[in-house]
Image 1 (tube, rainbow, N blue to C red):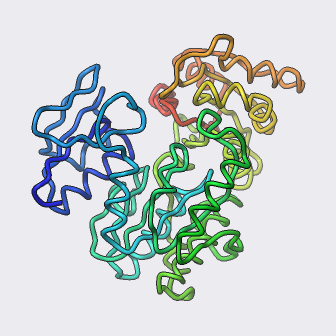
Image 2: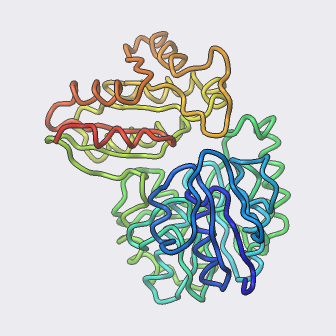
Length: 382
């Protein structure tokens, strides 16, 4: 990376901020643009960052562009991530759900057992200090399938957590998604898929985390970490940011979770029931992407129906343009068809106020979604 001047378009995001950290550690001069300042920029103190409404690439810089900005010319993020993976023996963790947590588990155990890993994970990992690490050992990568980034990566070890059709604007069918994975995995020397769930002690709740931990242990064994050495470290792993992150407000238990697919919503509610079996579970849910909401409204309703109280916000658009007739109310209507009375509060402030008003001491307030729904938490009364 020495001698390169890399300008990251979307540097405030979970992914590109991590890439920028590693590129800087490997000798590049880095800078970037984003629409707003985010917490992911904190580890990049001293790096030039342009904040403005539209993308900016100064003269003399090589652009590395987030998939959220397809019209901006430059190196796509999958191409740049491939460069990083080629440079180091790597473990790529992909799949529809749990890939960030599983990658974080692997990186944490490698760190705890003295193996000095590097890592690139699309979420903050409190126990690791950042979403990126720059050690000299294995490079652990969260490999995103949403824009086919994973399939460009020549990893030594590939981990597939699970597969469900989640990105309807990218894949025509679940069969196409499966075919893409099969093609990629055929090029990888070592593959972990369908690993048995971990049956030991874990600090993170839920059946899905036992599955994540089982996949992590299998990958760690392939990376040279014996199971009896890895398992005690894994038991100390407390999770990643916005993945079942627990706090307290006014005597209510607040759980912030990134879950944005019906399976993830169901898993988060199930984990809350497992951890607090006698509590009332109230959910504030923000749908993510118009395409996902349109295709999966019925499945979202089925998952949310397991809660005691449901409030639904409008769709967080992310990279998509509005679709006529597609709002969060589609999910509320599906819940009504199931006999569940749910609230439709399009604005985040409205949803937070309802959750706050209805939540009683001892209740679990589960804040779910991949957009900005976490901003509802500071609006809850202490």
